[in-house]
Image (tube, rainbow, N blue to C red; front, side, top):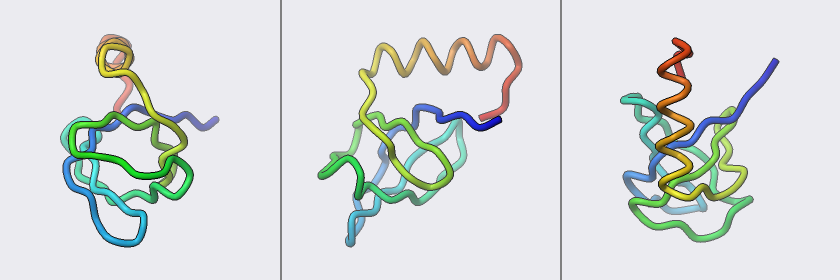
Length: 73
């Protein structure tokens, strides 16, 4: 089973790429599917690809719930 998780953009890179923070882990992901992003945006990320944008409040709640059930993102 696969799932996507919210991640905060920490740096915008060349070539439709961005660095994101996934619960403390820094990852580089493709933003080709979501268009231009800015530092501070929240993206829904799955296996290295941003699939969509997420409202910051929704991202915080999702991350809180994942933490509560003990899921490591």
